[in-house]
Image (cartoon, rainbow, N blue to C red; front, side, top):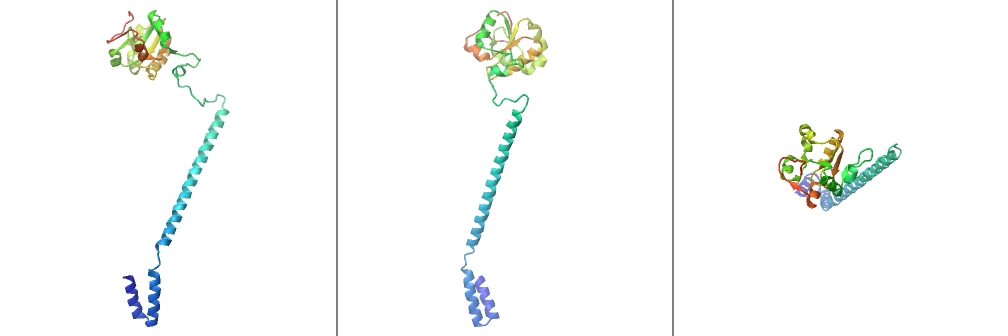
Length: 215
């Protein structure tokens, strides 16, 4: 369509020889593949973006490396450097500032229980306590400790060791309760294996709302 319009304009404007020359030039333009330059331009743009992306990633890696090196250097010159590798074991988490561990193994807890040398306190909520707990244990749910502590405190003998427990090693309720009772002035340990270890050892258990110390 574009070629026909040009031809008509040439016939009206130029003589026969000029029109022939115009037709030849027009045919040359029509047969030029304009897609190749466009394709070349798009390839250049894609390469440019790829190079910029690689440069950006390299800059991020360099900045991250510099930050890590600066952090390690600062930690080294501290008067009390932070430990780069933490011990997340139960005993480590239950170690106080003076180096005393509050963790107690099941083998250590059993003789204390049999000889009535400790008061066992269940840190789980009331519903779990009612379903089953160590026979003779008291219930002081950590989540309600502020509301229930005054009711349970008179039943805690300050001369006896208090042993807190909850579901198992992954349960931190007994840890939090132990630190709280320690601040209240009690001698406290945490039975690391908790209810799971106690039941697997076939130790005495019971159900109901109230625990007692009469075994």
